Length: 508
Figure 1 (cartoon, rainbow, N blue to C red):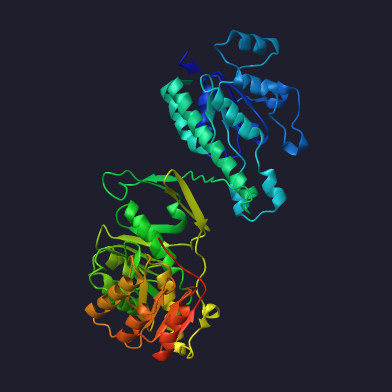
Figure 2: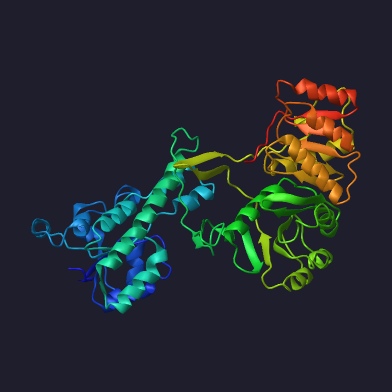
């Protein structure tokens, strides 16, 4: 039969919040309730009668609670097929009651791992009975309702109220689908904990939270974000984030996190920085970043690592931009910036913690470690006869951080804590350099004394020659070409300084 009346239920849960209305409904409809331990006590406090599982199985909870429900009288009652005479006969023979509803959740394994608990405590949060009950009830969805998470309590309550304590096949199958989603996510978390060293190569990722987006990259494409944005941001104003917004936000956050102890401001378009600068205040850093490309900044994503105050807000308010991200905003700044109702304002609460990146490709997935290496003074190897000055060295490291987060092939030109121009996503490094030089000229920058960063080595000396002719005096690059010496020799012959890092930062 498609419609089945719930006459008996097994309830054993870790999370009891919002369970009271369900207990009341089951009690009012005369449903027989089986339960264990703390859940039994909770149900009895709601005024409902409970049959202890120990009375059903004739076994107490043993091994410190590791074994409570693992018994044929429990699993037989769940797995018995109501329309199969042989199953019904065996249930009767062994005095096994049918169980029509199972409400069970799982120990908080992920939360325990995240808390930094000991291995012993983590292992004890690997649920055995709960996961088995979930799978058994979900497998027998034709006859049994399974509620495997507190997130489904409201859905069950609604069904019980609307259908007078009955469910139909569609209801039970929907609950079973949710149950297998819960169990597969749980198993994935446990596997990834045990496989921290990646000794077993298996692509297993599970994210329960999801948000349907307005569309994907284009309006004819559907888009969904899987993850918990509220962990990273508080949205203080504006419309919902789109697929393209999220891609740009990811790039912006990754870039700004390169700058720890200095006030930084970046403006991004299509994941590349069109403006980036350091300043003594947010206003100054914004002004310098905006000056790098006053055209591309229109409709961009803005980000800073310092509190946005009234002065900074007044300065940037006239610009049309999609998103502004900051660790905080003053009340005066918010009042100004909220003047544009669709403008998205995000308060950044924490740094990114992910260590892996992956994306679909061909008929599979590629995965890699995030590029967490930031070039520092200790990475620099002076390869020319003359070493960079202290100011040049600072500028080189600043340019290198931007270069790391810019689409390859890329060249970044900078000076005095300011991005002057960049050439991005070009098919040759020479084209990237020429693009950067031309762009710097368009926006009125003098490149004399500026520095250049490249995301990969120079196979020929052509780039350093073009840079020299533009007035650039120092270069940072990973090195590694069999013809490195040609570029080094050119620099020595023309009074340029060059350092290599040994680390390439391609971004495809």
